[in-house]
Length: 109
Image (tube, rainbow, N blue to C red):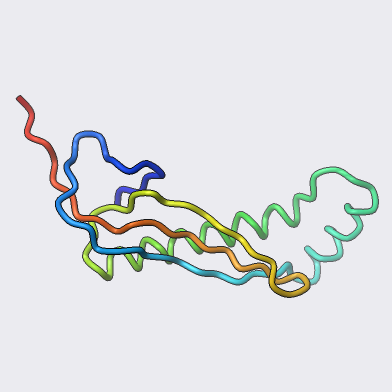
């Protein structure tokens, strides 16, 4: 699956637009991550425990987006973006989204 933040794919022509696809995940830190992150907030600096939670959420949202694209028969996703919204204490929604497309390789001259 080709995924790009751009609106074109080099060496390919877009043959069809299948619509917006998305992958949504809601994450919160586990108890250990919450304790370590809370202590780190007091001292300051990068909070690696929270960064790990964010990275896992983005990875899972991305994987779900790709799965959704495959379900609609896409060859690629263009205009891919992430969005995150905190909607409860220590609970954040991470959304990966883009436009599912079908593509064909350009003929080499």
